[in-house]
Length: 445
Length: 153
Image (cartoon, rainbow over all chains, first blue to last red; front, side, top):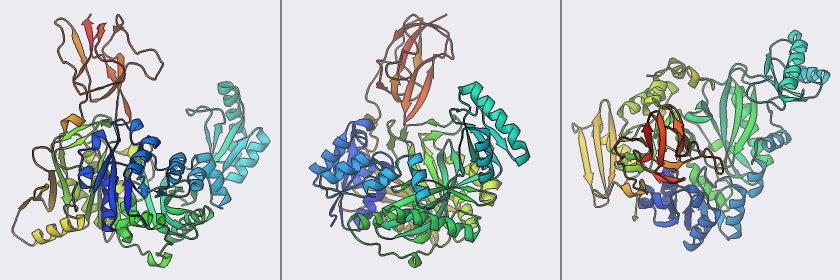
């Protein structure tokens, strides 16, 4: 039984894990870097061990330092949070070798999902749809691929990059000429005529499914939509993914469970899909074998504490939740409040938060480690807190979000609160179901 | 470190609900370990947490190195636009962006500062000749620290 839980992370997720550990009667031990020794999570943990100097390679990313600290603290389990060492197979192996429980999946699952090509291969084995396509070495093969893939297709140079040799083809009658041109361009630009033929998804959404598995069975906790991103960094997440037909949503959820079962997955995980915003065809991208930043939106509509589930499963328990027991109610939205200046091209803004007022009240949840006078050190990522709102409907959640953002007031550092105020006013966001091009279409101020 | 959490998020929301039905605009709870200020804000409520007063600003965690901000007369100083780790070169082993004696323009990149996992270019800000590089490679600097001296052209 887990009695002494070591938390190998920092910031809001460390605080989040401490809360659940405390509720379950576990002793929480925070492994903090020198910069974080005086932070709020360190004050709230039952015990604190220093894992090293402030720069993360010497502390949070050091397998040796973290294991040594956990051993010294006589921890019987390690929760890795997200980021840092959370999906590092070598770390998970070292934790096991030290006789400590790793709160996460088996090493085999971490390795299977370790890189995107490997994940694609495993996804296909599990019967999941992936973005159709493949390599073509000559024109006949390219034609064959395109016919199998369906239109529109994207032709890409196998050796290429930066958009060179990329051609979108909408109709079969244009294909031959385009293949000739793409191959000629590929040859001219890269000295290699081979092209890759792939289904072109003009309007894609990022939809993911939360899963829980105990090694023998697996269930899902519904979808999340994370289409609002900048440079592949998520800004806003919501649950459930809005405006997806019920049959398509059910198919996406089933695919996610099938992957978890195929992997004999143990713990909490997220299966990510690219969803065509027009046809709702969906394609498996990858699986994140850890708790995610955006897990609270799922918790808010299902009432399930995902960190608790992780700890119970890691402790060797079978899932006590069944698929029928998971009932989603209402709609939840999370916005990430980062210490970055939107006006200044998202320049990081470390420093002291001289004034911090978070919103509160019915349907409002704030996951943060940032009190008034708190420090945002320059060493780590810029997340200072997550504002999560819930409503009976999406409209209610959106208006709650707008009201909560009006209350939020952080001074001393720049934050992305102003960006989120612009997003919540955007008619496309209010309507729901936006694609990943949303951010490009956002007007400043 | 403490025996129990200050108040759970559920407790805090319950306080808001209770206050909603009252005529109060403000609640200030102070214990030996924390202070919670709840205030009416437009249609809603805000929560502000402080840890024990007096020690709440841990400046030492931000600044590891104090670098003099004094620039010799007749020279321009290039100040760090934000705190972070100052690097002379784009990557380990690469030649530095600039060396003493180099001529720079206002837009010339003289180094990068790594902050929160992002690389931020530092521009010279003026035209002239580099006469001194004041900060060693891979040194933690505070915002405003003088990184280089430039003899204006």
